[in-house]
Amino acid sequence: MDLNIKKVKKNPVIIAAFPGFGLVGVIATEFLIEHLDTEIIGKHWFESQPATTAVHEGKLIYPLSVHYNKKHNIIIVHSIGSGKRLDWEASNIVLEVAKKTRASEIIMLEGVGSMSSEVSDKRNVFYHVQDLKKAKALDKIKITVLREGIIMGATSAVMLKSDKAIALFVESSNGLPDSKGAARLVEVLDAYLNLKVDYAPLNEMAKKLEGKLKAILEQSKAVKKQEDEKLMSYVG
Image (cartoon, rainbow, N blue to C red; front, side, top):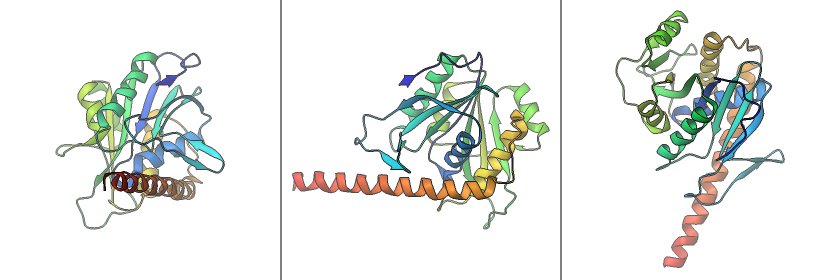
């Protein structure tokens, strides 16, 4: 993990997301990185995976990058590169960043399937946290505690390993990237952390990010398919 924490103030809040249901967490963190004044302070690649990356608008896209916003003292862990069997490694990176910066809390962003057949524009957001004081603060912004459910992936691993973790789950549809669900997560984060986000461009910008992430992930899948076909040609 290549991480520079010299510019980070004490006890930052960490916001982290990895590819999951509707890609809502990844789109939300991408929006925050672009909307807030952030600088990259870390990057990581998963050496157990094929050595591939993507280029978007002339910029190299790292599988995992760490960004810092000084004004709000927020660290954003953003990843498009996690996958099968990488959940524990991904969670360890989040916890490593938290340990080195003495983070005050970790907020994991996720999507969750809707109980109804159709997902409305005003998505429900649920939370899970072990700290009762933080639970009261989350109740004040009128989101609902998650009473029942199964949590998977890096979010699950972070929650199991850290009592500082808060998990936010927004109703989403499992399929195409869900920009509206991501926008709802940003709205909740804004209320909880007082970010004063400009909501005017949020949905439009989220749709653009949705297209960008979809293109990058499709490129990654194509490269993985080529690698598998190459391996099979050697075996055959």
